[in-house]
Amino acid sequence: MTDADLVRLRIPDPYRDTIGATRAISVFDSVEADPSKDTLLAAVEAGRSAGVSSVIAIGGGSPMDVAKLASYLLGSGDNLDEIWGVGLAKGKRLPLALVPTTAGTGSEATPISVITCEDGVKLAVNSAPLIADWTVLDATLTLGLPPHVTAATGIDAIVHAVESYTSARLKNPLSDALAREALRLLSTNLLTVIEQPANLEARSAMLLGAHLAGLAFSNAPVAGVHALAYPLGGLHHLPHGLTNALMLRHVLAHNFEAARDHYAELAEIIEPNAIEMGSQARAALLIERLDGLAKQSGLALRLRDHGVTFEEAPVLAREAMKQTRLLVNNPCEITEGDAQRLYEAAW
Image (tube, rainbow, N blue to C red; front, side):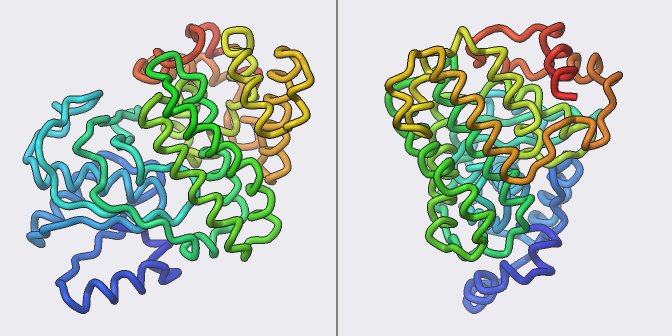
């Protein structure tokens, strides 16, 4: 399971050639960004027609998400529309291996698969059987990433770490430790891999950081930034990492008082000298530093820069309210009115 761009760049070739020396392989390379339900079902049918006995994904979050659900549907025979949500997929899947080519989604570490369904609505399956049997973190596969992809996926991973650390549900010492180490690795190395794209040490640190962030939010789930990012991806087909970057500053500011102490703790990871500051100053510093990282990475951080009109804010807000599984994790409530205001602020 991969995508056409990776095939064109021949990134999966070494893996395919090695495995193909001993086993018959069927390649499905039609996975698009923000993969659709139709693509997922096409992948399942392709696997069924080929009689596959296991599934390997080489790619970013989209191929991995499709692979996780395809392997489950092929193994379990479940009806897809009956397993959307948390803990409803309880059957057996085919053996599954995931090989990420971006340092971003952390999908190789999570039990979650997100699919774009009718009217651009993103639905997810979050169940333990989707956790892969094997994951390979091979930083050489990330060396050819364009700077804008490196930036967007890196910010995505940072959001995972921050939202896990401040999650209103299931936050625990293990998720905290994973999130803190992920944020340290990611914030330290993001600009390095953009400025020095061949720096394998920094690439490795980013890949490990993204993986740890994936483990963190598998324990303590993400929240408002993701909830408001999803409609931008579903309706405008913007890359997921970019949509998180677009909403990051505004949602963190909305959460400021509710999450102030946690933001203050995270600020010390990015700026050790911040320990001498009060909690309010440290929390404000975290938001400024994360926004600065996103800007320095080269991302355009206004909705208008990506074809989103100011008048769309009410529609986007209504769509965001459908992401109840994410909104419930936010440190404070985000109402539809709040969401509209945040989209307008991001415009």
